[in-house]
Length: 135
Image (cartoon, rainbow, N blue to C red; front, side, top):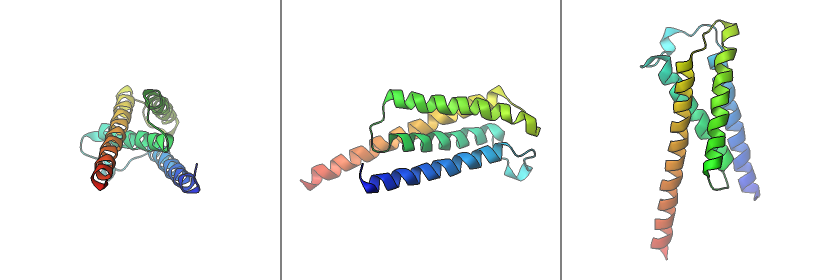
């Protein structure tokens, strides 16, 4: 792996770590002010937050390699298990664990993976068409 690729991978690792830490912190605040509510209630927050987590985790895992179904399932599994842990560890801080929250987490993760796969495909086609036009 080139030094540039290592630098990018390190940057992705730092970004993923910061995002994950922020997500954990946000989901373990005992009281969430109403001003932070998004339309659609907390399910939309779960959907968006876990889409971001899966997107960044997959981007970090797939950087410099080809995405495969096995890698996608691995990312989905990691995020789904973390969603369960996240829900259960909210109980001690006075929040509730809900199955529907977890389902929104998993749906968000699927959306994040789909978004990344779509972007990779679109960028790949753009690169190919640019390369074909340049020759």
